[in-house]
Length: 388
Image (cartoon, rainbow, N blue to C red; front, top):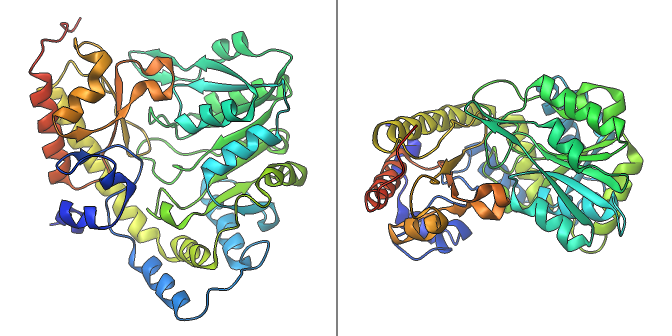
């Protein structure tokens, strides 16, 4: 039996986590992107060691070995990063909000592909910039980058293109040709680019390719937001990473955070360093377990709920489920909550999410199985439209 098979819901609730306390007791929470798995041993050991030292202020630019580790980690994706191009921030979401403020001005437009992780939309709206959205292409084969849709939305007032790869919520891992098309589009329209690559280490099919690795021209116009939080399940430590070969872009990004978003603590930096230097075997095992969960989910839906639209994610631990064939599609989140499963409402990701729910399968096989059986019972209550 795998270690991850022994997760106890009562113990998970005892951890004061947002995930397990957002919904009432008895609801299986498969919503926010937080894994239920125990933290890697080397990370815990590094945190304990740091606690026995002292917890004063860290270096203003970050712990040099950590900056080097971040740079070295990108090499596995064919991206040569200098530690001087790395900035530590308090998380990817603050980076998105700062980017909307820093890389576009009042009256400027920000272009986003939808459906998309809700903080992308919130970052633009809260900044007072004008949000323009272009739908991802979608056919029987899945989602894809749609340059024609982007061309329809871009205007002379558009300054910033915000991207996500691996993509949340669809789980797509964009191909080199898709990324090259995005880079060409951004360069042709002279757009700044901020890209969330936080799930880069959680890829099942294909290979993650950093956008900024495609060439010096697109690298000069891009800020990459990433970090160890998702892959190593340490989001609560509050550490993200911004990378760019353009120092002026990094300075602009950091300006709105000044005095508002504190630098990651020495404790969070210790945990992140251990993740990068000693966590690879844990990560490899975790990705394998997640792949098994993804396959279990796909097999269950294919056998018991074929009317639920599902395309296996190529990356992330998030499933984008289409309940559009069911009469309850507009209230799908509430129907599932009443059945005892907490999922994300697809409309939060943009209008393309109508009838969709996002499911986080980073839990034990037994809890995932129980959640799927509850979903099946809920779906039995109404007859879906037939498959065509």
